[in-house]
Length: 149
Image 1 (tube, rainbow, N blue to C red):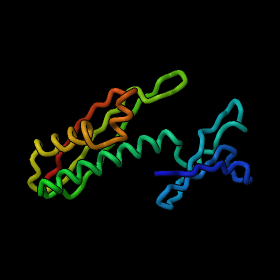
Image 2 (image 1 turned 135 degrees about the horizontal axis):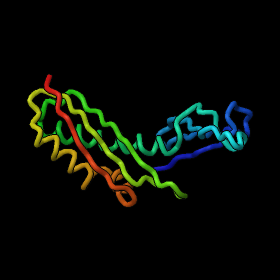
Image 3 (image 1 turned 30 degrees about the vertical axis):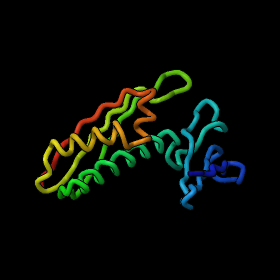
Image 4 (image 1 turned 180 degrees about the vertical axis):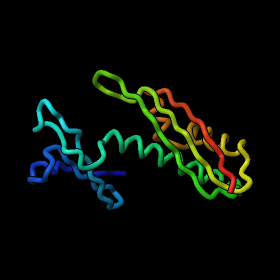
């Protein structure tokens, strides 16, 4: 796996702290820093997601992918899955994630709560490399709701 991240600020773009990532699979992902009121030249313009937001989003995508795949492999009629992640960060550098809560909403027909609970646990204990990695610095908690259609 590879990725190339390039600073776009030198190219005369609106944000002096903008970056563009090109993934190994050929996709482009813009990033920008937060505005810095004390030193605007060192801040972004809020034109794209922050890198740490993308890290959190990637973790959500990783675990949601696992949950859907595990439920589908169990032949459950899953029709939707979303996960809302809320994170806290350390107050001092490095501002790592210290707490992350993931709340899953799984929509389906006749999907047992025990199957959802098991799929979430399997993701976090075995399959989701992103959440397992972040679990080294952050306390990760999960919850879920099941919506019957």
